[in-house]
Length: 264
Image (cartoon, rainbow, N blue to C red):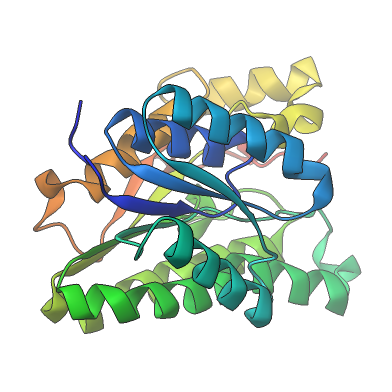
């Protein structure tokens, strides 16, 4: 406990699921956290996360922004700076994975996926890095996926390519920003049992196949992803840079079998 005492963190897409777990774990280690949410619909959830962080003794704000839109990202950073201070830990967690086979993917779906999964990392990281460079300190952690490395399903080629792009963006930023004492890394979850996957995992057959396909014979949890982010955001990882830490039970190191690729 206390590995991140008084650090200022921003977690995008933090009103639920993996983002919520990351925000809570950062707060448990002493960080003050800006909880980003996208829409009025998710505002109550973000406020609950904020309350949990405050109950842990940390400062917290809930800040609304569609991280795929430049003007909203800029307004979010201004609000965080005014209410908490300069961001020292940025967790680019926001992401979407609309299921559409390649031949049915629309331009709107493609653009929305890339804006959320890639462009948001570019815009948020660029703004965060400005103050990090001045302070000669910063941690940027991008939440990616097993899809950054392997084909995980035949119905999300746009998602997979966006996560692969974000992986290379992570590496490129790491090389350029490292000289300023800024660590840029990523985590790669496999299927995690959160509300984002509720519909997908509601089918007992699919849940069973997901478990069976994983070498650990279990699904991951949001808190496990939070644990990995805390490590990468801590001084324990000062010499870890440009790394994609897979939190996938070993899924991406085994040869996939046809039954592993689930079309639903």
